[in-house]
Image (cartoon, rainbow, N blue to C red; front, side, top):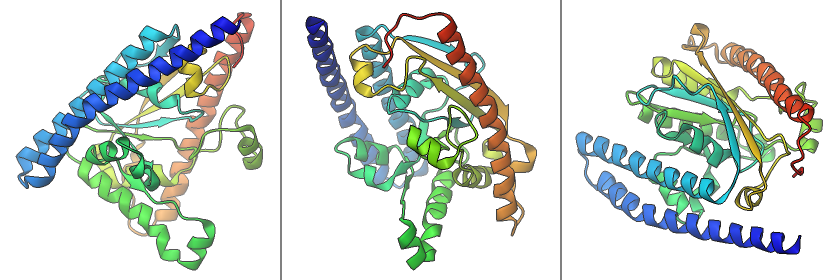
Length: 309
């Protein structure tokens, strides 16, 4: 038992070193292309640079996924990705449980759909190396203000709205995948209880960010990918992944057209529009909760002997 623990720790350390090396290997050409994009004010050149930057990022993801696959025995059970297109544009909505969700989503969707952009907290731009990479790849950075700050300065409420609209305008006219964890945070028992969530396995979805994206993108995004990630053995950490302690991961992808009534918002009906988006999200989340429950029940009935995380 002690020997196994030591081997798992060494495995995780090796994984971290290899992923860090892969990151550094890809960051240098990424920064060089980003510099050209920043300095050359020619639309065709910048468009070419954007494609090169996405290609570099997809290569980084592919190598990371291959490293994790070679070092672990995690089984991925994926459904619903057979008809995806790289030339399409998608709004990707997913439940959020762990940082493991990120490499899972990247593995499942890399080179199947356009490179995914996440909405990130503004503080993450200071993450060494990755912060600059996210900036070069046009990831939208959002400021989050405390309730006290918003009460003192109500105009701060508009900053995220304006940042979202600017980001969406950059994405119009090109194939793009916009990723949103609409629960706003990773699920925890205390958060679930505090929200009085009506869902057994999910937090309440928040309509604000989705409403802004749909309103800003208009006809540019016609398809939603609703993703359910399920860890039957329990909510894992990144160390669980690198230490080969996640036997199974289920990913269920459902593809929907954006409802016509949500593609455009009439001037002055922001509150009503957000309410329609919230009602639509609640329906998606109820079905997602049912699917997650089905996977968990099937896992229990199979009498898996895999240890719980």
